Image (cartoon, rainbow, N blue to C red; front, side, top):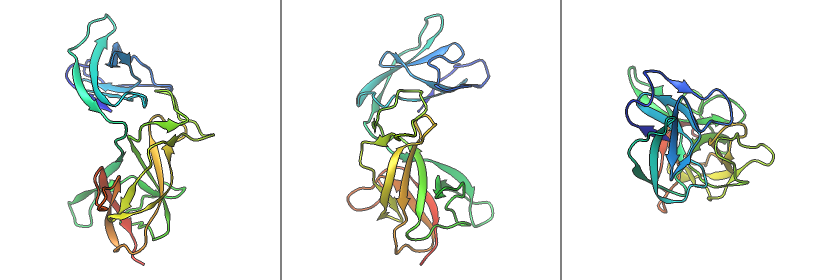
Length: 221
């Protein structure tokens, strides 16, 4: 998660140098319901941190505290038990000077994105990445790298759509060795039109994206 404000650092970027992520970075900590949470980076106007997966759903209190004990005002925000969001990055469009949000969706076992230049095919397994799936089994302590054996699987049943069509999920859980990053492995559904198709983590009962959506490339078959 990211928290925005002013004067969090002295015109510098501070980043955590090792895992587990520290509860104090520079001379600053971020409290959620009075509890220090792991920090990944601090900029003068932004704090990036991990919201522990066991944070209760509902209204949460956020406060920044300095090492000398002084603290900012307390603000509130709503926390959901699960709020899946697929990662995306800006990529050059097919027309000169255009850009689009490319989903973090990769051909299985590679670093090759399923984009316009490397489209996915029906029946292919894609690996997609994002955040916000909440509780896992086994649970993982905040700031600690996720385990590989067994992997921490999401307790919330995942839903994923490609081209507004439900796609079969084969795995949903935390990426081993990383902190708070979720992975969904999904099979590309058949019958999609070739080209860029919306990919969404989460779908409503009508099959339309209801949560985070971006684009992935599909080859028509």
